[in-house]
Image (cartoon, rainbow, N blue to C red; front, side, top):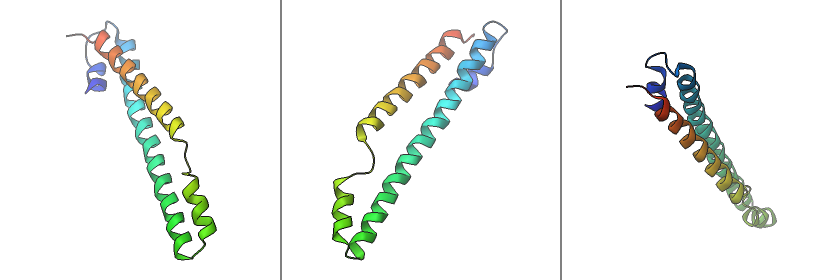
Amino acid sequence: MLSGSALLGGEKFRNLRFICGLSCSFLVAATSAYFARIAYSLQQHQAFLEAAVKSQNFALASQLIASPGMDRWVIAQDSSCLFLFTVGAALGVRLVEED
């Protein structure tokens, strides 16, 4: 809704509204792609672990259990940054929006 309201309105702040609206749309797409990649990585890690257990390769299974495959701290930082950028872009839309 915010990106839609950024594209409507008068001439005043038109370019800034357009940039903020596109930024919101881009950030939604980027965030979705980022978390889809994380979900796929978790699913792939689980599949590797199941395959190691089924093949009775317990050395590989214990190695997969010991390393989660992704650094949760990096994911938390990336998520926070994406959230802050989205809030900033949405706030920019709201500030330059005309009635």
